[in-house]
Image 1 (tube, rainbow, N blue to C red):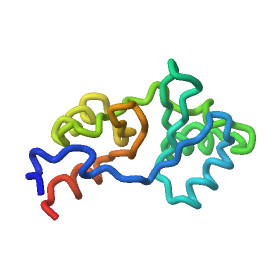
Image 2 (cartoon, rainbow, N blue to C red):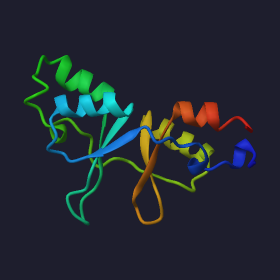
Image 3 (cartoon, rainbow, N blue to C red):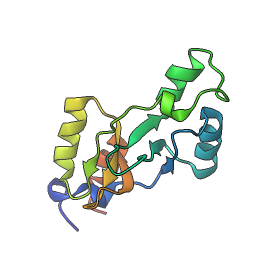
Length: 134
């Protein structure tokens, strides 16, 4: 196994995400997250020149629940952060942790060489999986 200082994001990322269309309602998105145990929604690109979006549970709480908006009437694209800062799968975890700190991230999509989402990474993954030699 790779030492913790040389582990890459692909070694510790997780699959707790779901790729969705931006037109999905918040109500449907929450149901999907419950069913699939997803921690985050990644909003699909509309075309090759577009960028991925991202929605965390905290976004739903702050932008829908706290504002007393109807989750049936709000689409995911209305509350997403875009562009999502993506992390290369072969980035060393120490550099990923530095990016998280520098940009105030708690979670980010992980992309392969073809810029396809292959997972997500968060602080739990970085610390609990990244600093162990299991």
